[in-house]
Image: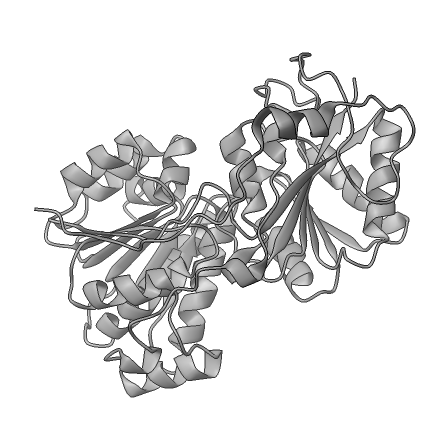
Length: 427
């Protein structure tokens, strides 16, 4: 029997106005250069060619990139049943939580932490930016403080960046508790990771491909794993890790605690749940397909040159305080970042050609406001906790609408308002 706990919320996204909205958005054809204020411009909506120039990308009608957010005053605020001080955490962990500034749990934290502390298998469904990492890290640390086996916890994540973020969160909350973690991900020296594993860390955080490689080398023993976490499970399956995940799960003890965190439950995930979880409790705090706090619009241009000029002009406006820009290719992202820095908008870039240390350095400089612009391929579209992003700009359109949703989820996090702008072409 599966117990399901659901947070009832009201969708706050203003409905589209159907034909009336479309008529106002696309009625007049103008050929003049856009003004300094980004807005909706006309084009022929029946031309189904790929307007972003993305090779192999599916066509997404520009109306899908337009949605006006409601005022913050209309928001439905979740009322937590607990404070962090109510949870039975040990004194050191409790002090670290206070030091971090955590007082009231988010919805996913409030509802999952008690079940995880009780040792239940949990499926957590939540939008991005809702505090999922702390929802499983905190009770894991509490349980580790009473468990001497090493390693005891395996956390799987889809990307190197998310694995790094989870590790940072773990180290912050476990400070002073003599609990140790290590990261095992692709793109980094595997021999060093093997040496780190020989030190028997309590927590191993890794991507499925590298975890499987280490298992094949007999460098990773999962026979003592008591807790297994799959974070962004749907994203890992999207990236083709299903067979690796099944292989890894099969090597862990059957009596382990298993935690699935995901934005959605797909049929494949449902199959994994039935095969590998034991009477899981499902906690769903999802609110809407797109963040109700994100105002979405399009910016129309006539040429590549105008598109670049328009972006530079926009970044010069005061409201663009912390901007995440998405591009299609590794080369294009790096070239755009270099150009923006050259014309006076300090920028960093992350893409597949960067080493892990280079990518982490770029992310840190963006988080610390050392640069106000981060240009990225879709490697940054999911799972990263980048606070206070004022704007997401799709310089190149995403390949799928799902990718678009994940991109714009980098702004409007934690209840803040955000803006998402997508470049489209007149022709």
